Amino acid sequence: IPGTLAPLSEVLKTRPKLLAGKAMTMRLAHVYEDYAVMREEALAIAAASLGDSKKPDEWTARGMAFLYLGDADKALEALEKALRFDRQSTEALTARAQVWRMKGYGLKALADLDEAVLKAPRNALYRFQRAIILTEMKERDKAVTDITTALRLNKNYYFAFGLLGSVFAGKGDLARAMKSYDKALDIEPEYHYARLGRAAVRLAKGDKEGALSEYDAVLKANPKHFGATYNKAEALMDAGRRDEALETYRAALSCDIPDASHAAILGDRLSSVLLWREAIEAYTAAYALSKHPAHLLKRSAAHEVLKDNDLALKDLDQAVAADPDLARAWALRGTLAAKMGNEKQALADLSRAFRIDYKNVD
Image (cartoon, rainbow, N blue to C red; front, side, top):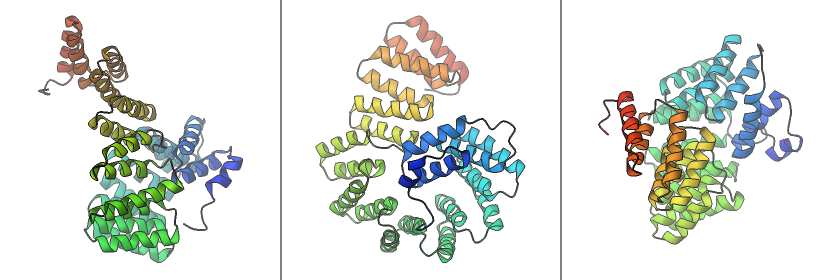
């Protein structure tokens, strides 16, 4: 929102040391899509000792930090504490809504945002956040109502215009979608979400070159933008420009990847175009960002394709150590052990997998 956010570059000159300052830096970095800075500040907040603090803003900051780090359970625990100390905290409520969204509980997220809007009906941000949930629940007309109200409260709310574009695109109204994205960019020319939205509209209209020009505009402003790089690669592949697409997929590996899910998506795409070593790099990034053993299973599969069975087995060892109840990890390790001639381990691992999930026919 113009005039309300300090430029991230100015904040980073001093890099606040107090928790509140770090929380502000973390949130600004998220807005400006500087995910490396965001994670650095989030890690610092998550590691800070709050002891028996009863300050809701400190627990809210901690909850947001874990949210940005992808740990929904720890985020929820911190935010529940914030709300115990101040049940009226709309900031903690809206943060908890984001956690519910991450965990896939749309109705719970909506309930928290309903309460926040009821407590602060003139807060445009809360209506914007509720509109996101409503859009994901396919309640697009209700989402438009919230976005329209947010824009009445703040006519320069370019985030809201960007979301409105997405809602119209979801309804198939490409003309109004483009108009909304254009309005967002009129207010903030470097709002990359809106430019990526315009690219999607152009692709829907069959204008592949126009879409590529939109991606290039984003990359001119931010050469490490993951979304623009990845989507450009997809558009190049769709246009039959395979060699350029493969190079662009490779370039995405050096971008500022937002989170583990995006890294995993990149890994899956690299696997699908048979860039196995690059896929391993992407799955390594995904695991580093989340520590979820599912990424180890995918990396193991890529190692196995490359006939690096020892590395594949090492990944599966790590996966079963991280989650001993992950039946698929035991099954894959057993299958690989059989392939490597270790029948005793194969039988033990496959039996373990069956005991954990005996209904799984795979």
